[in-house]
Length: 263
Image (cartoon, rainbow, N blue to C red; front, top):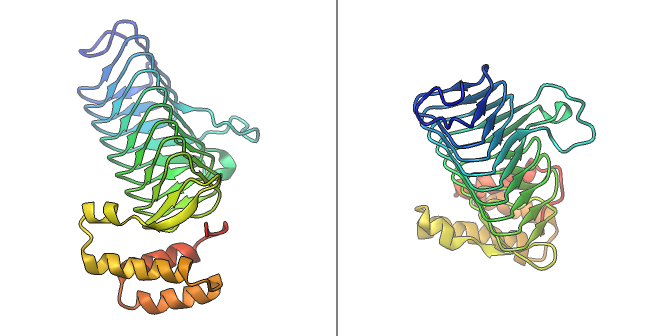
């Protein structure tokens, strides 16, 4: 199949079972393995490797030397069938690595739409990443991490396994996240990351008005500034949530948590 279609470089190696949509381009010396499906308009750069079972959506841009769909880096993995699912219009930059899931972790690594995953980003097995996220260079997710929509991870951020980061959160450069980060929260690097306010600028850019942001700030003060224990803080959040869908989403995130809240 290599070189048999416009946009497929003659040196590319494509397994006969791989399914490539209309207008897919594959660069020099890239390898597309069995059980890989790539949607219309996606461009794969040079020297990439994509292993299956992996399904990639439409209009993605995968830059050189990315390694996608490889076996999970988990000693418990025994070769069972697991998958990687990637949505549409993502940008995956050079040397990014994204693993498939594991059998005992749900079997699927999943990435949404319209994300920017920059150079040397690593997304480990069984992670779930939302849409419209930006992961800067060398941001790293351990296994089983969940990331909401519109999350920004700055360069060299590391996220511990099984942690969750809520929608619209911002994690600053070099922070190590070892607990759940609620939606809307700004985390700064101090050895391990610590909450340092609300990501107000990011919320403004996404159309949150002053009233919504003020309600989120009141919730943040109850959770992080009041000095009360978590159970009492949740009672305050419940009262605030009666008048704010955003605070209600924050409280629901906390209630679902299994790991300690980053606090």
